Image 1 (tube, helix red, strand yellow):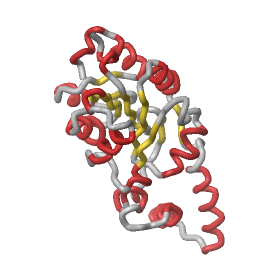
Image 2 (cartoon, helix red, strand yellow; image 1 turned 180 degrees about the horizontal axis):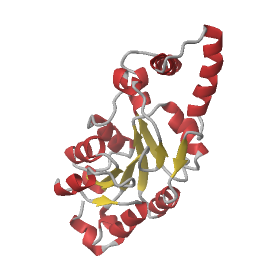
Image 3 (cartoon, rainbow, N blue to C red; image 1 turned 90 degrees about the horizontal axis):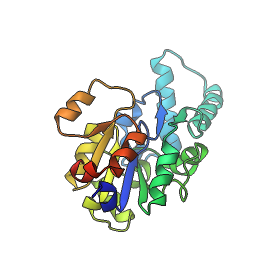
Image 4 (cartoon, rainbow, N blue to C red; image 1 turned 30 degrees about the vertical axis):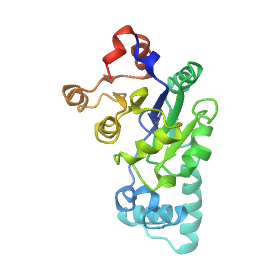
Length: 225
């Protein structure tokens, strides 16, 4: 019996798993969940992030100039421009849903991922995924296991052993998903040196979603994850 036959839900990380984005924002560490805990409005979070980036780079602008620059940057990050979708993402998500499996996306991201960015990249709720859990809307982010518990509830209280989570981080995806009883595996799309350690720790590590589909359809997958 394949693992696929036992699954009722698949949850998938977004950045690094479904789409790619180059860069890192320091504000993610200072004010997690896009300022949710600090009750910081989303646009204030982004303004602080952009302003701090300019200051660290040695640039300072008057308020009028900054506002013009900020509006362009904010609009850019609310579009598909800084991102690219992996070619196997849409086919895999659609295949899973065609198999009658509920598909959820779990991401440390703000509301625009759900409303703007994913749809702009061709990953739409209703055709590629059924439900989303986004840290900026929930006030909890990976690796907190609670975000995975929220996902299980949103899926309709599906049992964790009937759910598979796919991500690209041992700390943020694999460990917390397994801690709540979910099946889990990791993608190594960028050939990270950490992948070998992930395997030694017992994780299934695959290169892409094509390989995930092959594994799920294999009879050998029954106890793989």
